[in-house]
Length: 370
Image (cartoon, rainbow, N blue to C red):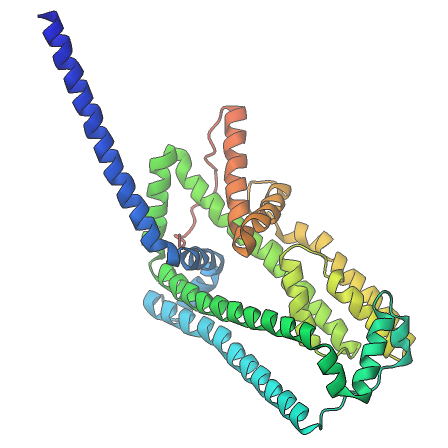
């Protein structure tokens, strides 16, 4: 009798285990399938969320200008942000196409001329002599020089084509992200409540403070990384214009990119300073530009402490390490995700060490896009 009962219990246990296994398998299949279907939009949604969180204070001011009309403010935000992206893109694309047509026409008609290089070019370090020879050859016989450099030019054309294609994809993704950000802002109250409910489900009463930490961290990175990079780019542009460097806007954009990825702007401004010394007749301007370049490159040393980590109960070093590490792992998007993960990890570790929760005593905030 006991044996029959044990056999029955064993069958029931096996049946329950098999039932649980089947259910878990079905749930896993649904989750994996849902993720694969959603994955093409994942990057755009993440970027849209980051943009919504970062620019929500701007959205609040825009909404107040229209009497609290949430939908109208969201539509205007989308239209304005799209105009700020699409208009320069169209103008830049038209300028590039027009320049390429003129270059091609000049090569075909033989009217394109290259001015001879200055003698100072030979004194440039490392590349001076070879650049002077190639430049001189191009100024005498451009067609022969192009024919000699044809293999290198073909590789350069392929890289440029790939870069243009990548830029086009990035612009399309940015457009989708801005639309998603506007929608998230319009539904910010519901989105914020959902985020806090999910966090509460995962971490109990410590969940909502984690959401607040994530929001504050993203805004801190925007101010401490993006804003600082923009300031450095603006300062660099002023120096480039004063020194009369050709394509000053292009070099300023490169400074912005380099600063965002946490590299010193002197990597761009240093070679330009060498060019200014060789091409500018005024030694004072050349020396002034070099000093200005060093100031611009080192300005993040006192700008970052002013912006990075403000309003967040996490050390600035943790956020900075998270930004750099996240960017190295996941590119520009990691610049925002990395600090959030590290900030939450830091708070969890601190709570574990001190055996206290991470609930923050801070005033209630308006609901934000999450």
